[in-house]
Length: 400
Image (cartoon, rainbow, N blue to C red):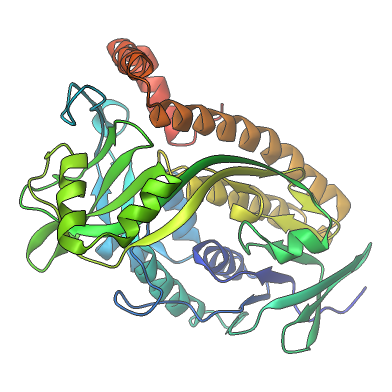
C-alpha cells in the first residue's frame, strides 16, 4: 500500500474549504488545508467586506458533524420568513408582497445567517481543536500531478505532498481544476453585485426580504443588531456599469439611493460597513471530478446569489463526498468513488443552476410588460398552497 503524507489535501481556505477540513477532520481523516491568503477573521479588517452566508436547514446536521454548529449558533440570525416584494411599477414601491413562512413546512427556521468573517474565525478555531488537521494559511497549491494510485501536490513554497484525494475548494478560477484539465461552461449577465451591511430603524423580525424591480434583486438578510440598531446584510445586484457607479458613490448619496431601492420598507438605511463588488455569473464544471480530484463549491459551480443556494449546494457536495469516503475509506479517491460522486451531484447541480439562472433573468427584466408578467407569476405560484410548499422544500435542498 502506498504511504501518503495526508488522506486529503484541500486547496482553498475560504468558508467552503474550512468547512470541508472541519468535516473530514472530524470524521477522522488526516487533512491538510492550504490557502495562499490568510483568512480574514475580523469585521473591520482589510478585505473583510460584509458578505454573509445563509445556512439553510439541511446544513445544520452537517455543521454538527463538523463540530462547527455549537460555535456558530450563538452568532446566527434566524431566517423564519422569506419575503418577496415586487416593486416593478412606475415608482419604486411595493405593489405585490408575498411571505414564504418556514412554519408552513417545519418547526425550524429556513436557515441562519452569519457574516463570512465570523464564520472563518470560528472555523479556524475549530480546526485548531483537531490534531489530524493542518491548516496552512499563506501557502497555496502550485501544481497537481496525478496517477492511478495517488495525487502529488506541489505547494507554493516548493514542498510536495501526497494524498489519495485532493479536494478543490479554491474558487471559480480553481487552479486545481485547471491543472486537471476540466472545462467549465460560463454564462455572463452583464451584472455585478454589491455587498454591504446596513442598520435601519424598523426591525427585520427575522424576515429575509428580496425586492425585485430591474437589474437584479435587492436582498436584505437579517443580522444581529449592530451598535444598538437592527441590522441586515445587503446584496444589491445591478447592471454592471450601474453597480460600479453605486460602489463609488459618496456615502450620503449611496444611502439615499439604497433607501429608495429598498422601497423604504425599513426606514432610512445607514451604511454600516465597506462596500464590496463582484461579477455575477453562472458557471458549471463539465465534471465534478478528475483523477484523484473532487471539485466542490465554486470550483464546481457558481450561481447568482439568489435564494441562498450557493454554499448550500456546496455543502451538498461535501455531504455526498463524505458519505462515499466513509463507506469505503480504503478506496478513498479512486475511480469508482469519484465517478459515483460525479453521478450523484452533477445532474442536480446543472438543474439547480438552470433554475437559478431563470430566476435571475426574470429579476433582471427592464421592460415594464415583462415586470408585470413577473409579478403575475409570483402571485400565481403563491396562491397555490401545494406549489408554494413544494417551492419552499426545493429551496431548502429537496431533490429536484
